[in-house]
Image 1 (spheres, rainbow, N blue to C red):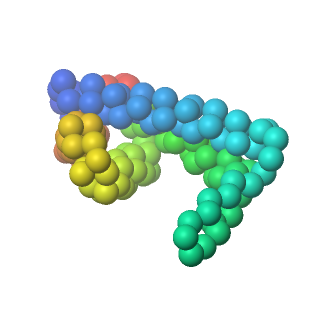
Image 2 (cartoon, one colour):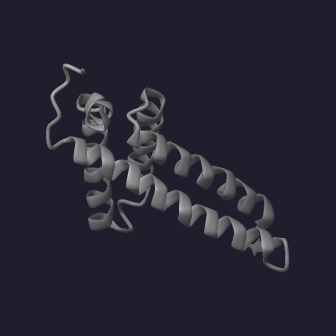
Length: 135
């Protein structure tokens, strides 16, 4: 029997797992669309350069990353420590990336950064409750 008391914060851990699974599924869909679409390159012409972007490479990256997100989300429900660490790192990177689009979408960025902070708090301070709640 575990001595960890389960509080309402365990719901934020489950929320993080659900978000990871949804984000992973969306990444898988985007990745498969990029892989199976006709035409494998995207070109952008600017005043001084030509940028060539390999769409299939981008698609494979999203398929792999989406599968990892889904696995981490599922593992988070079991209370696995490695899944909590990976989820915290992903939430931190997402929060930092929102700082780049803050001038473009201030309200959305503030909402997402707030959710990232809540998820990081829930997983760092109350993360052990996920394993205790499973028992």
